[in-house]
Image (spheres, rainbow over the protein chains, first blue to last red):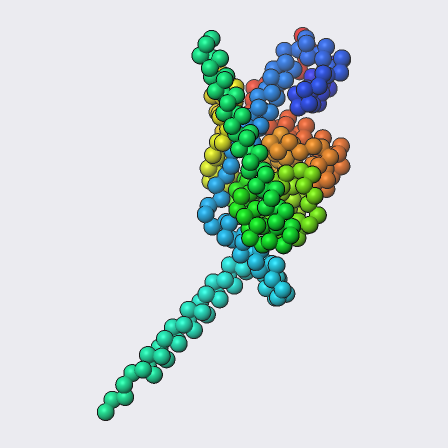
Length: 119
Length: 214
């Protein structure tokens, strides 16, 4: 039996901690290469399981992006629902810009109305 | 000897404390799920807040690209929101989210049809939340883990998906097959190929040794 033939059995036995088929087990018992491979698989699996507790930092803005996306996508307006993630950002920015321009215009008009008429 | 026993007791206490707090967190999540299923939007937003980092982490591991991972995370929560009434609580909410995320990532990878390298190892900050590994293996594993994260990124997306979902997130072969849209046999074959490539990447010396039983 060649090492390539027992490779799958070696990888599966590590994962499930099941005994290997007798033929494969006998090969591994006598083959230093397969024993080394078995040990390496154990190390890889141990390192993989240690990644279970690690987390990647997505940055502070992802949460609000998700919630904005949910609000838009669950809105009743079909036009709003057709917006994808990137368009949601543009739409939000455009809405804010329009609101800012409107507010500024209103303030300017109000200031002119209040200004006393020169005699 | 005494010192080792003390360490062991400390580790058991730490482990028990963490398990208790995890149970508490899971209970809180379960009650948020019930509230969200009843139509409470705030409860769903709290669920998002409690789990989005884990979901993003999985998405990033599957896509190896930050921008794709953000898209996948958002899409996953939208699908979760739409399908929440079907969630029966047989598994934990986070496990359910993992399955949705895996499915979204598979769709995203098919749609984008690309494989970008290089973003995960450089731009990823890993925060280790576990501390009770076998102390003798911890130092060695830490070095190996750094190389492993980089090696994972070099795998083709299809192989990376099966090994991440199986060996990190402990999905069964059947769950893998279902979420990735492949047969159980294909899932097993891909898993073996992924492990073989990962092992060869991390321990290249062995592949140069002649294959022969003594």
